Image (spheres, rainbow, N blue to C red):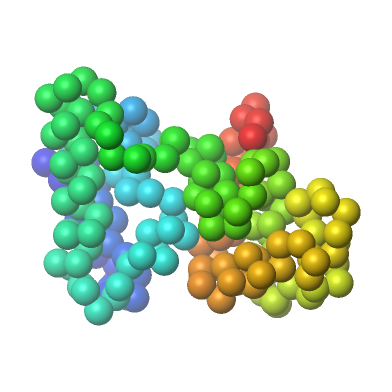
Length: 174
């Protein structure tokens, strides 16, 4: 069974999906279940970016829950992930998302770029680009950073960055 928790600020805040089923135990990352029992529907900033608050609960069910449950049914039937183009788990999946939107191939530079996107003030072009190129931001990744700055909610980016840093402290290396 699943439980959908609706945030008091719905539809501004996205509902959360929790699994309460012996076949989907909490902490089973291969089944996309976090330690809390919450279903991992994707990278926080990506989900919010794709979320249309006007779609309401039905939009959440159609866009996030139905594909998640279809993935679970496939896994249950075949014992492995299907050909759905999923990202990796945890920090690596977050890095993959930001690599796509920032057009950066080396994951080790992404946390620095995320910090710029998560800053409260729009990053200035004269600062050094954190990608390691030695160029100023305006001559390097400025367009990608500024585009994300206006598109992604800073708190979501900072939450994603915090998750990467937690895993890096535990031994994860991008």
